[in-house]
Length: 232
Image (tube, rainbow, N blue to C red; front, side, top):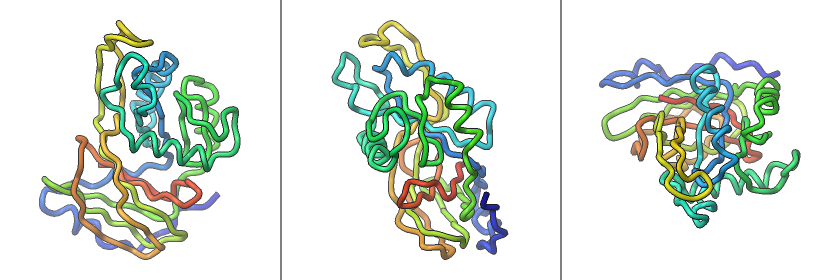
């Protein structure tokens, strides 16, 4: 297992000036692809909320896809970018029961393995086996209209992604497969934006904050592997 290196990053204190908040580090990324119109998804949505509450080392995010929107209820949180992200995983992930397919509820762990998000035992087993990210370190600073992102030097190369998300939403579903239910969703992704590539050298940039109360930055390799992450 690769250990997180000691990094000579740019001084984090510098980005914390001016009412800026330090990022929360995480070791494991769990991405749930879900929909308000899928009646198999509520148990997975509930499990994700449990992970958010009980497992701070895990950055658990809820990506609502669009392809269920035509079946009686339009998910108010569905994003074309979430559907596209899941399709990229379908092209990369070649193991598992539904290899090469898009489906809900799918939980992708560290960008390299997946499980059916409603199958609690399988999800927890995959999380236990997941290797923690440690190729670099990320620091985030929040300003009123933007985010300062610092990535320390490290090994490998990848793409940086800015994710905007809301901590919790509760929705009354009025039609479709979940019609009549009141369902809760945790860490609901509201925006996904690429920030550019990282080639192993330290970098610092300020970017618009985008939609969502909170933000996460993911550093992801070409094979989908999560190299580093932080949220604020």
